[in-house]
Length: 137
Length: 137
DNA sequence: AAATTTAGTTAGTATATTCTAACTAAAAAG
DNA sequence: CTTTTTAGTTAGAATATACTAACTAAATTT
Image (tube, rainbow over all chains, first blue to last red):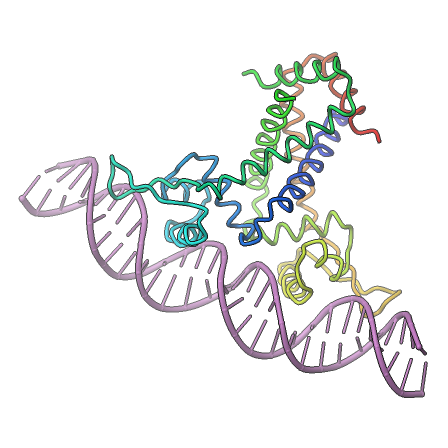
């Protein structure tokens, strides 16, 4: 157990570093940490409305309205009015906003490469099959 | 390779969720995202001075001075004047500041438990030995 | 020992982040 | 069909985050 926790800690650190390196590569320099967090959350929720985003971020709706306005100005997000409820809009990431996904992919590929470099074909297969066990409900 | 990247992505998502859950458990509600990031970085650098912290965060020194002042007011950080260079101070996390480490430990333990639940004794040993291979230079 | 560099601070400014209060307009309930 | 609820916005205020310019004081160079 202790060993396992140490491994997770190391892996977590490694992933953090890779994500940071990826962030530099993709140079979202016109975004603050908080704005990145908004984009991540919009992405994870898949086109939420303002209310859903506010709940997820644990912020008040006016706060989110203002923040999203800025992200729209900067062309990272667009609002698409809902057909079912005309008061409401769904938030979509623009092409530019979706770059955050490519950024994560980049980080993940880098880690995958690191693993591939260190393990044999057979070990990689074992590694994958162990994770498949972990990720079944 | 594709499988491996998917696994890393899943794991990364899982870890993110755990870290968030841990943050809720530890309830650093008087800290902003950015302030948490300062504490993380101070912790990683191990008692940096203002200049080193500014470099690591890619911010100007006056920005960091002001931010650290606030973290000191909130009792998360203390400054210890350097003996070698009396102009400079080392930043230390207080007891309260070091809680962020416990928070990470909590997240890592939760993931470790998740893994232990899904794997047999033998599989865990294999899992650990594979990671040991990955983490040797 | 004087000049320069370095570490950090203070002051002032601009923008970001968050809140509450008060509002509009659409949808749902009575 | 009137009342109430819900989705979101606008306005105004407080605090946070970041910058440049100008400074102090200690350390280093010349």
